[in-house]
Amino acid sequence: MNTVSVNGRTYRVPTSPTVVVCVDGCEPDYLGQAVAQGRMPWLKRTLATGVGIVADCVVPTFTNPNNLSIVTGAPPSVHGICGNYLLDTTTNSEVMMNDPKWLRAPTILAGLADVGQSVAVITAKDKLRKLLGHKMKGICFSSEKADQVTIGENGIDDVLARVGLPVPDVYSAALSEFVFAAGVQLMASVRPNVMYLSTTDYVQHKHAPGTEGANAFYTMMDGYLGKLDAMGCVIALTADHGMNAKVAMDGTPDVVYLQDWFDDWLGLRRARVILPITDPYVVHHGALGSFATVYLPADVDPVVAREKLAALRGMESVRGRADAAAHFELPADRIGDLVVVSERSTVIGTSASKHDLTGLDAPLRSHGGVSEQRVPLIVNRPLPGLDRDRRFRNFDAFDLALNYAQ
Image (tube, rainbow, N blue to C red; front, side, top):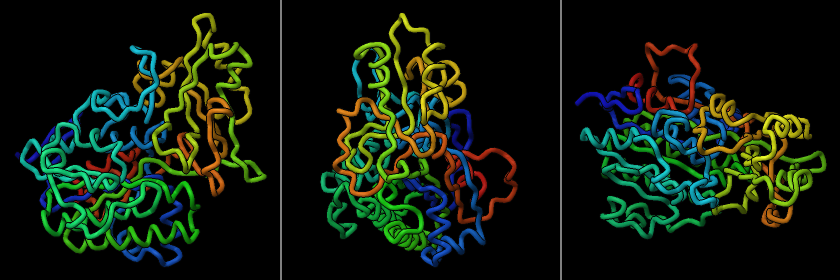
């Protein structure tokens, strides 16, 4: 079978091994600064001979919605993953969206495996593994739990011995380096037809573009991508979201505590603020991002609440449920009565007492809003016949890699 159709889009099966890379938190300026400073020679050559585009990711600009958009080729309104975290209205409980039960659409990866393509997925954090590998026959494991892999669960064993690196700390650049090192090792030994690599944004939360901490990370990445290129791989590189400083002029986090604001207005806990950035790994961002969703009590008019909240300092956009679902391509049944996006330098919290910021050892950098929507979309091949005037999304990565770059 030469093509596979997934979520209304058709993809050719690859004639060359194909690697799609999601670099977590990769603001385009990270690449521009590193290339300008001579730290990414492979990327500099690739941009001269291949294609480099600045594309839009999906909002909220968080990890889970965008990784699932990339591997389904569709927005959250189709695949259903609208955050890292949501309010399950059937149980009235706040839960992580790590379980495949939340996924409403098949993945391109599973579709390719079903037509006989060998597929491998390597992700930094284990929170994404089951979603990315849902119903996919092939190899699927995380750096975080590389010492726990089995043939039955992950399609591979002895990963540490294969890669020659120890299990990395979850709060380190090494967690992402393990993804690249394992990808190169698999391509050299197993040579899958299609591979998806997804990193973590620990470095991007800590280091601004052009700094040594950032440049060192991108130099490391550049070296591994060069090795994959030398093996004859088609490479499509994109990001799940960008990253910005979220600080006031004195360098402290610029936070609007939205639950406290609603409590002061409506009374204690009558409204419910959900922060979809929430996940188990909060040391580097304190669970503070630029996107929130709000559930209002029945006696509060959403229009009145929206207008009042829109006047609050730091708010960029406040939309009602239907408007937000249409505008941001979100599943309406999984967002609140209001969707709130803060300005570029501002983040949203729940209550001041609920956020532990003691782990922040650098000025806060985070994401979630429209200000982090622009991301790179780079392919290491010319793309003949591509309409360069269309709106590009990060979830076009498989389309470009399979339908144009082969």
